[in-house]
Length: 235
Image 1: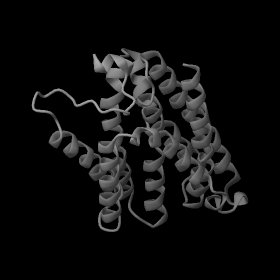
Image 2: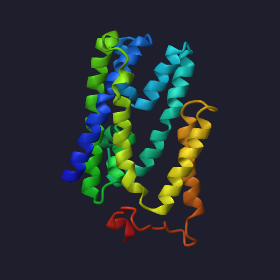
Image 3: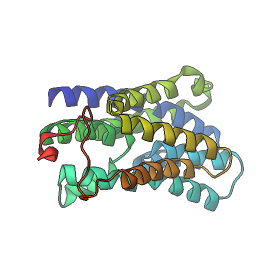
Image 4: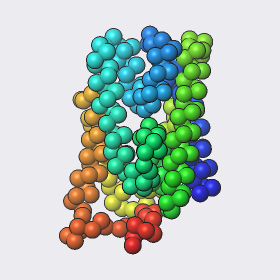
C-alpha cells in the first residue's frame, strides 16, 4: 500500500503541474478564468479539455468544441468498466470514483497486486491529480500571458513520461507488446485522418479485438506469465 501511495503521489505531481499549461492556453484562447476553472472542476479530463480549447482557439463553434471533447472523453467509460469491479464502491463513493476515473488513476490502480493497494493507488492518484490539476489550472489562468508559452517548459513531456513509466511494466508479456504495437500503429495512422478522440477509441478497439481472438476455447481468460496478475484473479 505504501508503494501504491508513493506511486500515485508522484504521478499526481507530474500530471497536476501540467494544469498550468491548460490554464494559460485556455485564457489565451479567449476562455474566461471562471469558465476555465469550471472545465477543470467539472469536466476534469485533460485530453478533452485541451481538445475543447483547441477548437475554440481555431474559431470553431461551441457545438464542435463540446462534440470533440465528448468524443475524446468516451475513453473514460472504458476505464470505468475496468476499475469498477476492482474498487467495489457504492453510493456517493461511486460518484466520487467516477469523477476521478482518468488515465492516471486507472493505470496506477491496475498496476497493483492486492485489493488494498488497488484502492490506495486509485484514490491517491485520482484525488491528488484532481486537487493539483485544479490548483495549477488556476495559477496558469491567472498568470495568463505572463507565463509565456507553457509548452516550452516541457511539462507535457513530464506527464507523458510518468504515464509511460506506469504502462511499461505491463508490457512484459508478448501479447501485451503486440497489443501496444498495434494500438500505436492504428493511432498514428488515424491521427491525420479523423477527429480527435477517434484514434484513442480505435486503439482501445485493437485491445478488444486481440482479446476476443486470443480467448481460449473454454471461455476463461488466458493468464500470461509476467503480466503482474493478482493472486485472486488466478484463482
